[in-house]
Length: 512
Ligand SMILES: [Zn+2]
Image (cartoon, rainbow, N blue to C red):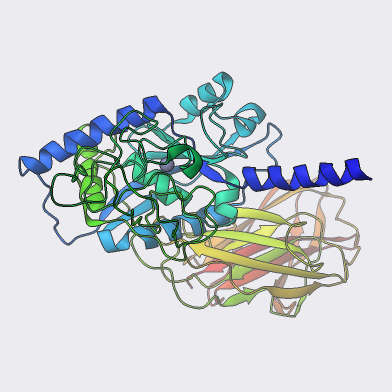
């Protein structure tokens, strides 16, 4: 019993230790970012600062969702959309917005999913990297393979110029991605020099004037002989000193009274995006940090690590209600083997996540389809169970506007499957075109193995008969013109009825 007790305590302790989160940046990365930062500071000194136009600068992002080799366990798209929404919210006061360039890339590779920093994982990431965009990979874990304290939530690799953020950060909508974008755009930690060492009063009193990372420890003073903010820490004077106080600190108020090497009490800025305090409600970038990032954006467009030729094709905000056409809300669908879903285009939306499932709790057991190019309808041909309750919803978005979230959940019941024999003699039956756009005729292409007497019926989604004509099919190919002028937009069915059976096909009228 005592052993079990000890084991429990140790387990709790280790959970506590590993609940501490860092970004997996190593000494070499820090050096590379420092070189960029110092170059940008030199630009500021020389007056080469990009003029803010007041217009929004749009930066292209390529998201890569990693999953295991069988394609499962990857993060669901809505979390990527919500993360992008959050990122844009965090950068809007700086007139920087991020957008998805050409959708999401999917990578099914267990090695990269479990350890993107392994040699094999690195190759997978490299092969998927899209130049000129901010490449963000979302695997299960973001381990860098050593050199870091705590659990690595994400990292920016300057040598590869990509960002890796583990899926849990998106699930919990943390500020980790914003932090890594800060690194990507040339920022260091305010506690730079203490990146891999936590300030421990038992070891670090008095505070050493050289940090564990080998650079000068930043002093609190902003005037006088103790002032060293230009050459210590993150080299920025509007971010106060930080000796990695945030790692393990339980709240957003550091009050340990730690003295700097000059003997002044350090007044850390807990809620800086680039620090390690995890419990603040709101985070900020300082003006100096924003200036460095602005210069880095201009520099990246010059050196083509962000293609300046790229830009979003749609900057509309997705807004408005989701208005459902089919299946009717809480109605009975007339086709239970194949269900047609249709909704009014949501203003601003070019893409939708479509989800449906049986009405059994959440959507996790259902299926989803990513719809692009404004497609606002879909036919699901998988067999639906008869007389069963189903639910569905959509998430409308475009490449810049991803905050909408899922619509409310719509429900419907499948009807009876009417088991009617197919017409044996009809070898093939197509409706051309299947989607009728401002046209007055459709063509029924029917191949029959025998000459045959059939009725051709057009019915609407509710089953109402629109027209009925009698036709004699010849053996072989038959082309029958059918007028659809006067039909309003919607879903219709053509039924071929013979003495021996019934064959049904669906077509859609749009824009009439
Ligand atoms: Zn970091």
